[in-house]
Image 1 (tube, rainbow over the protein chains, first blue to last red):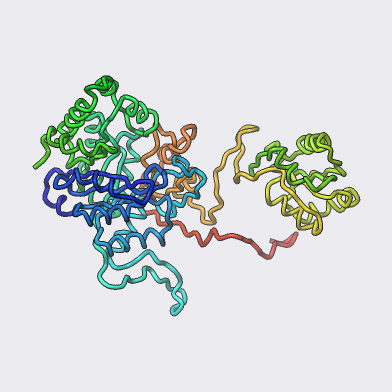
Image 2: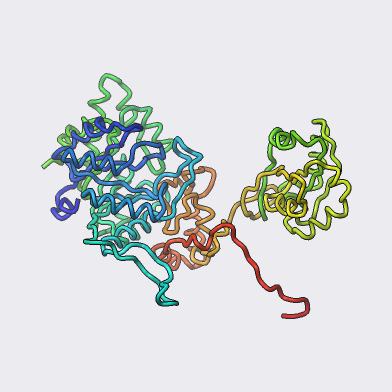
Length: 302
Length: 225
C-alpha cells in the first residue's frame, strides 16, 4: 500500500471474505480477478460478526498466490494482548498492510450470545500498531526494581514491524461531523490510508470531502457493486449511512440486463468519484469477476 | 439502583421442585421501584406458588435487602416461619439473594428475578442504564455522559460508523451516545474540551474493574468528622 500511496496514482483496492469453512481456494480464486489491478486486497475479519475463517490465514493464502493482502483487524473479538500478538504474527508472515477497525457488534451476526470484547477501539488499535513499529508494545505496569516508576512499553525482540496502517470512515453517516472528528483522530494515531463505507451518491460524497477538507492521507471511496433491487433495499434498510437512490434500483429491475447495467452503473460511479478522491475500494461481494470490466469502463486502469 | 425483571414462573417452580414449603423475601428498595419484589409482587408470588400447590410459610420485605445485618434481623423476627420453609425465594437483585443466603446457612435460597443493570429512574417505569461501575469515572471528560455505559462498544475515542440519524446501530431505538455527548458538550460550552479528549483518551484499565471487588474502610463514628 505504501508504494501505491507514494506514487500519487489513483489507488484501487479490493476485498474478499474468507468462507465459513476451512477451504479457502474459492476465496483465492475470487481474488485472482484483482491480479495486477489493485494495490491491496482486504481480507475481512469475521465481517458482520458472522463466524468464519480468519483474516490472517486468508491474507497468507493471498500472499502465497502472489496477491497483495490487506489484513483487517477488528476489536470485537480480541483484547489488547491478542490484538498486538495478531499484528506481530502478521508481520512474521510478511503481511504489513493492516486496516484497523472497531468492528461490528456481536448481536448483528450469527453468534449474538457471544461476549463482545472491545478492549480497544479503532483509534487505540491504530496507536498500539503504530507503537509496535517503534519497537515497543502497550505494556504498562509498576517497575518492581524502581518503586514508584512504571514500565511504559516492553521492547520487542529484533527489528520492529513496519506496518502501513489503514482506517475507515462512513461518509454518509448523519450527523457526519463526529465521523470527521474521529477520522482526524485516526490520522493523528497513524493511519496512512482510509477506505470508506459504500458510496452511491457522488454529490453527497463531494459534500463530505469538502467538509473534511485537506487531509494528508488518501481517501478511497467504497464501491459496493449492486447485484439486485433486493440487495439495494436491504442496504437502505440495514446499512447505516448508505442510501441507494431509487433510479439505481429501477435500473436493476430487469433480470436480463441486470449484470450489464450493474457493471455500467458501478463504472459510472467510479469515474464520477475519481476527481473527488484518491482512489476506490471495491467491495463486489462475490462479483469479483466483474471488477476488471468496471474499472476498465470507468477508465481508471493504468 | 439495580434494575431487575421478573423470572418466568416456570423457572421459579423449577428451582422449587424439591421444596413443598417456601418463605418469600422481597426488597423495599430497588425491586419495589422495578415492581419485581415489592409488597405487591411478594403477595402475587405467594398466590402463584399456592396455586401451584406450595405452602408459603411467610413473607418479608426488608427496607433494603442487600443490607445483610438488617435483613438477617428481620428474618430472625420470623424465625419459625423461615424454619418451617424448605426453601427461600428472594425477589430482589442478586446481591439481595446472596445477602439472604449469608444469614440462612442451611436453607436453599433461590432468585425470583434477574438483575439487569445499575440504573437511573426517570418517570415511574422508565429505568435506564447510565453507569457500568467501571471503577474509574470518565464522565467528566465526556460532558457528563458515559460512553462506557451508553455505547455498546464502550468506545472512548468517538462513534463507530454504524449510527444513523443519530441512532445506534445495535438498537435503532436508542440514541448514539456520541451524538448525545457532542450535543450536550456544545450546550455546556465544553465541545472543544471533549473533542480534545476524544483524541487524547487512553485505554481503560480493567485491573480496576476486577471481580470480586470490595470496599472495606474504617467508617466515621457518629458525632465525629
